[in-house]
Length: 550
Image: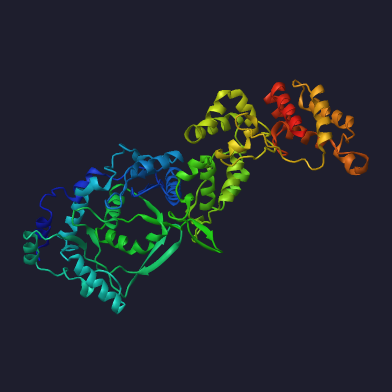
């Protein structure tokens, strides 16, 4: 067969060659060891936590080697594309500070010299590569209808034969040039298939950057490389794009391992150097005593929007994902308490093959530690940023008096042993509701070991001698003074040594005042609360509580 004639028959408008595109997209001039990685999502819905995980790993591998991280959009499947799909992806990546060097940096903004970065805009490039394969007898047109393909699948299922278009089932593989020409003249739709040289008796092996050596059967299926509209399949598009864009390592989910023989075969047939592959295990979740993949349908935490809506600090989520990626991150954080997470060197050979277990309780602990490490000003800024988007009432209260709110967030913010009240910013409302009259519900927790008469006596005495300008030590001495006046021990250890001699201890005195002012038996630093609320408001609260006791 005259394959050059066939190529011209199938692609009469394609004038640029593969060599032309190699000149348009020259090899990158990067230092030795620099890695080029990419995140290539389809705009078919929200950004999944697994997608954020993969993009974080790709971004880290690129930037810690002074390489390039690319965001390109794989929009070849128009049927599954959703409205604003690209915007959702970009918003998710931006919210979690994934730095994009090339490709889409905004919905309508691309940077870089290797674009377009949307696959549908690269149709002629793929067709040039397909034309080259046809001209070398490595690809051919397939005119089989859906009904014919269904019949093939049914026969294969019945006979338990490897599914796909191969061997005796590849009906169009040996059509003559005349038959092909006649079909095209008739206007019959066709796809373009790669002519696989695979042998069912042979196996291939390749080294995965995460899993080590993998051995699999050769691909024998004549897979589709161009659909009937001239748009490529994922298989073909990623091979062409990763070659022209200079991708050095393809980091993707392990569901693509089964496709690796197809992709490596395509690189081989096109005589192109294949990138390394690194297949990430999925993020798992415990369910009814077992494990399963985190699911878009079942788990709200599958969507990265969940973490923004809940108010998880970005750094906390990133650090938790890095810990899932490399078990060594915990040691890094323990030994480098103030270092930014980007200083951690991610190593693919230390990633798990079985998938990290996603645990919201653990995530919350990580985020509590992270928020506890911030200054009060930082917490304020992050809290109001979240509240502005998701809780307008809280935003109004926090911004009404910045000094008041910052002082509130500064309670127990001791650098040696900071209090860890909140792990996400939607907990601010409940954690600090007692500081705002608009949120204070007027409910009071029980104080089981101090009767109402004694509580009233404690408050009355305390109100008379409280000095809002006193430092913390002087203030605590005042509590001891109140304790002695009501027959309580001034020291807890004194009470424990002889409990029958006292009605309670100084800790009980502080609990009574705490409940009177906040409604709670457990709060941050009471001295700080009283000082921040001010004497008038604190006194008003205590008066109100006395009325509740009557």
